[in-house]
Length: 175
Length: 260
Image (tube, rainbow over all chains, first blue to last red; front, side, top):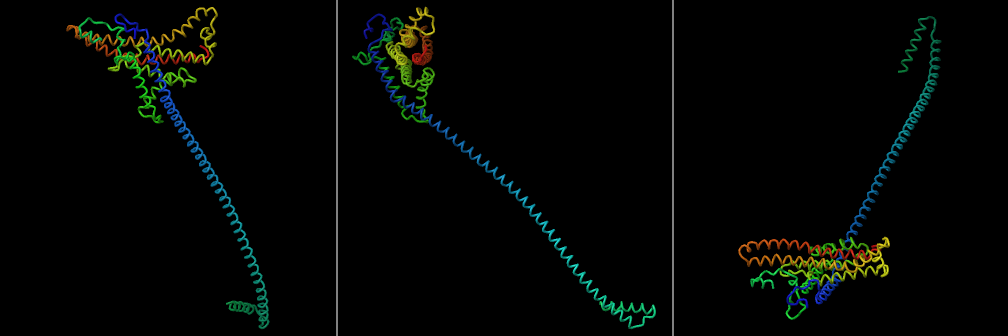
């Protein structure tokens, strides 16, 4: 404080010992307070913030990955389902065609079987008819012959009359 | 002292360096002067503010924490990471202390009732510059070894040998004399001159009020200019706190760098 001498100008560039000591103490004090109590806390807050942001980003990324995976899975499932439906349709079509084919062949078979049996029946009936016709014609012929023999077949008129009567009888007997 | 001059109607004494020599505010205790009181007041104010702001260290900051973080981040990113770069974190507390200490003590120059910039007392800038001086030399010596560090200062690599005759003294003077001196004197002179300027306008304006009518009418202009200068001072105060811290960071970065 010697520079506070009475009168005259003091030199402002000359430091004061008391102020130097006070400045050192004040500054050091502030440094230690800030170093111990303030900067670590701010750094802690920054670190926590960085972590929180990074954690959030990571979480979002994870969610996105999961969503993408799910989407892929669903797309795949959809494609699978489509493919399956396609196969089923295809199968149904071939199956339908096969069934149709089978039906057709069965019907054809049935038809030919029916035709065959009908032919057999017709043949049998014809055979039967032929047999009975032959019997009947024989009998008729015999009957006719006996009739002709029984009556005198001398003239044409008579002869035709006999035939007519025979036929008439034949008709009658048929009724 | 000024008021006495004005009241007694003496001629106007322009403010001088003597106005920075203040008597102790506690009588009988010689060291209890205003600048020393202000220096300690700044320590209390800064500590209280930043402890309150950083106490919770919340992820989502309150307004107070946000404000504190803003200042801290300004020093940490703008001066620490930007300038020192790699390994800047361990210097951040020092830069942060330096910046806030100078800033608040500068603000004292325009805070009503306090109205005295602590840094206009040259002792304080001397102390701060000395600490910076020791830190950046210590960092350089620790990083590169004393021999290599001094060799790189004195014989800047990549320079033709004869140039050393000129360059070496300049470099030595720069590192050991010019840097600490300019660092402290720049801060001191700015605060000193700024305060002197405010004194001139406000005390002058006050003195004019005691004069004849014509002078009384001029007086408001002095006050208006004084108020304008107060805002200007605010800018200078912030700037000087920033420059001091910036240069400290630059010196540390220079000492850490392998090549100068």
